[in-house]
Length: 334
Image (spheres, rainbow, N blue to C red):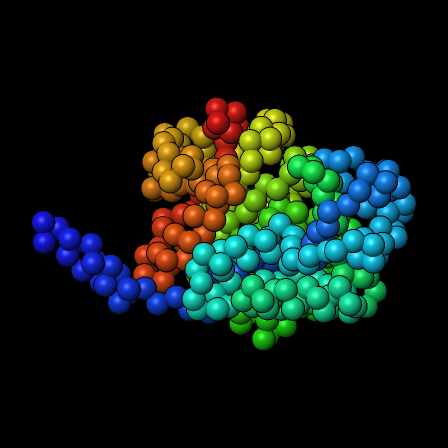
């Protein structure tokens, strides 16, 4: 019994000796939003035509909503936005060192921008924002009533990211080069697909891990072309069930072949595949050249995967991830 009790301790010590997480090991780029959360009343919802449980983009009639929310109710601020939320929680799981997660995005030179920078710093995320004065910082109001939550997003400055003014700047690009795992949500395809391609190419050229999220059905519907340009570099593709189902229907009309690796298209006749599960995630394993991709459906699976990828990257173990696009028959099967 004594030997059995000592074995886990010895293995843990050995792992700790080899794992040395570094700053900027995880890189994310996307649409930063300042989440403004408050418990509101029905009159507030009615004034702005809001449903108790909904997610919408802000319109002209919501222009005064954000300031009124801050003045009228007790609010909490959080550094938000799809990708920033993901790297923020990944940083929380990693704990040390601080600034293991890096984030790029665009904000305004205003009060909400200053709060957003402060909240990112509190989360120990190394956020390097492109700051401009033409648009205000993007915000997302979370209006809570009972068990319901109505979300109103105003992207504003998040839509103004400029590759040549931020990503291409030498000091910023050095942070990209330091990363070993890259994650970008599909939402950013609506803002700067050329930035995504540059980061994805960097990951591919240096045998690092690049992950993309399908994000929402409208991305596959209206941004299919830029998405397919990124696919040849994707090692891990995230998406919920609705996004996957819609994506599979969109890809049904896409010219064959749908499957690529980093050397070019693979003819469907050369591909054999199986699928199985690992840590709660569906894995599509392509037998040719041992390429695989992961189809991950839940936020918890995604966060666990981030943690595992950062660990194995720092151990110097690189997954044989060369696959990107998913064939329609696999997507439909899922």
